[in-house]
Image 1 (cartoon, one colour):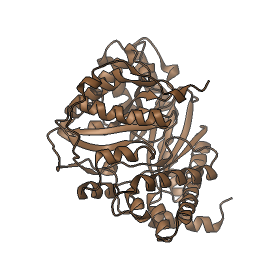
Image 2: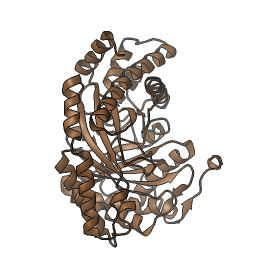
Image 3: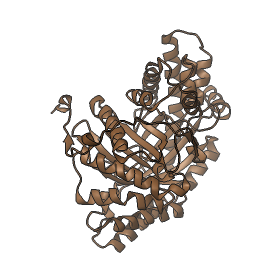
Image 4: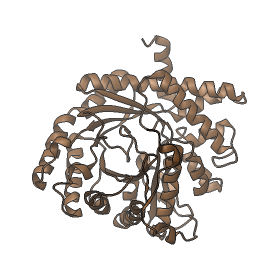
Length: 454
């Protein structure tokens, strides 16, 4: 039972410290929609999603009113489309018709994003996978709410370097296709290693094939709550610091579990997981970088940053696991640049570089996220950055991701405005040295020795 003290405490976190449920994400299996006729397939997809998700937004709004807990987004994730379209799609243009159907259905049911325009190619690509990947620039430039992801590596299989090479060009093509909007299409495209089946956060959400017909996953966030708690123990030792983070994460997760269970009950759809990720926004006081500063750093990126982030990420997970038996997704601390005012300040002060961000991804929840780079960056350089991040995930048995935005027409020192939750970003410099011969080798980087656990 939640007692009156917890209610008062939760209200304070909501009103003063930017606590919110970032998303209720409804995962929907489309496996029963498969049909060799493209028109029939698109109709099946539209009918299935509108039927299952028709009450998602109204239920989210009702929970928000009844409990006074802000629910920022209502979203849908679907089975990776490269699997659903394999028998019907004979060209990349065929896949784009499915993207348009997903966009239409997202608008119909009122969600802000729909994820799952995805391919899972950690070992190699099928012809269907490759067609979908090649369709991504057209799909993301012709839709508003569709999000795409490609999983190119895993600890069990290694890294598909053919896919990594291709996706570097696809990122650049997506940037070019949306250059009239500061290449925003790339903000809806994530490249993964070890992608989880139950991630509720966009742009990387998809409904894994190990999931049931439908499931409710909730993503809850509260960087401001953690920062406020740490202000009360300023100067204390590390044991006190860790206990404070852990207890705060416990409280935040309890809120997420409550919302998830209520949504599950009202919709008649099973509850999956709570993703406790400290996901920042451009709002003042809603920053992971400011937590790192409160821990004792002048800026994110200063010496000690990786250690401070490792501490934060671990204690968040420990607190979440105490609060719920079903913590999943990406749970931990996100370090996007454009969505975190503290990260932006660190970049503009010269404290934070892409190389330091890469080091931080060894211990955070995801990876290089919402990083704007010059629009004239070579495709092979982008592939090299992706390969580095995938290697971190593969070797460390963790999820890593890259959401990088080569902004066409912009260069280092320029600022790019994305708006809303995506915020704005300074264009960061990239290493100019050549990696073409490495990327052009082709084939697969084998799985590491510790992958053999059978």
